[in-house]
Length: 204
Image 1: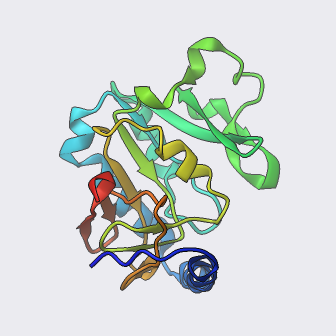
Image 2 (image 1 turned 180 degrees about the vertical axis):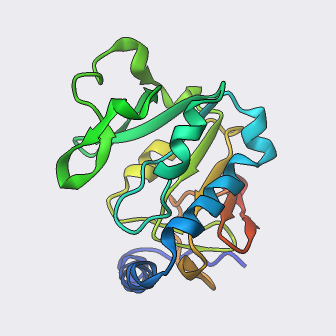
């Protein structure tokens, strides 16, 4: 059942769940091995095979780590896109080599500043065929709780409806049911080390 509540109550519940998920994710053992397994499952999806332009996130902190698989993805015929943040908005960058990434603010690996203005590197969200989504907490319906800044919510609201939203998470980030507000974007799939959950997506 999809329980949608509003206002401060949702925000308060999300904050509490976010704190629990941060602690669980930080304590997760074997992050490298599990991350490789989870990202490999993402790259084995039929949706991946059918897509030409695919957005990967570049992991930060204790997220499922994507950088180990990113180099391999770049060797394929797929067009790989990564996001980066500018003034509270996510911009999209066509990544062709790991050398196009550098350590930026907050020790985050992101596209090099000198390459961002290059017209050929700039991608519109409407060009994405498949979108990999990070997050802090999820439930099996596809509900997602992020860091609370809304960067991905803003981006995903403009994604094509036929572009699947696939989140990556460790099992410990799955909760029985997350509170959700009307504007929240639900995932089509969530991949963990032990399961592929089929979410409600944007058809809810």
